Length: 267
Image (tube, rainbow, N blue to C red; front, side, top):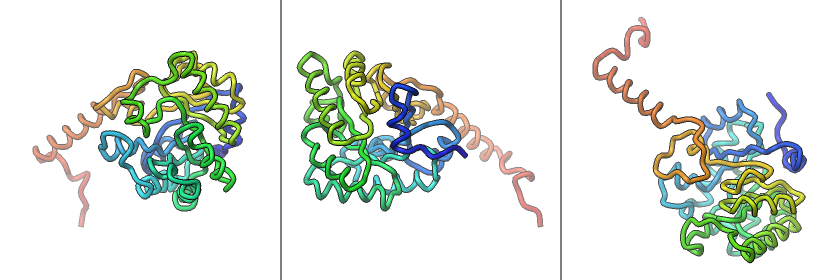
């Protein structure tokens, strides 16, 4: 068993080794992930889409996120587990933010939390970190803000937008985050932010210059067919593999060839 990855290990990879992060939401997939060298497991609010079938991430609740986080940590992975704070779990007040962040560690047994936004959530970030809870930031396309953005659109295009994004990144760094997700920003903006920060950046649709990369596991494995963003690379096509296995199972049951005696008990 490899050594458990810590927040400090992630920080120390900056400029030395690329960071790998994937999402996971359950025990079985986490057990498989744990046989690899993945550095970080994000229990993403994307569970509201890929696990629950929601149209976006806005409907998933704190209770549901804590449940998914617990399912992941029950596998005792070596990767650092980060709980994704869902919509309206931190926006109302710093007290609310600290209480809900604490639930990820106390009930879900995660080691850190992630939340979206820049200057508007700085006080929440500071309060969570002051409670000894490590925080990962998230800028660019922040899915919880899709209605404010008018949909899923690349962010940080143009000088003013890029400057504002960098300023938010520096504010978050000053507040004490240990890493920053950059989602759907131009590659050159991802490069500039990565070079300006002392903490690692983790890209998703932010180009090759970030300190690491993250993908939704079901996208990476070719399991989720409803939508495929431009930035996703499918490393397998499990939808077809699983479909074929299920079709073969149905055929054998209906033909009476499964179960046979080798799958049956004797007296």
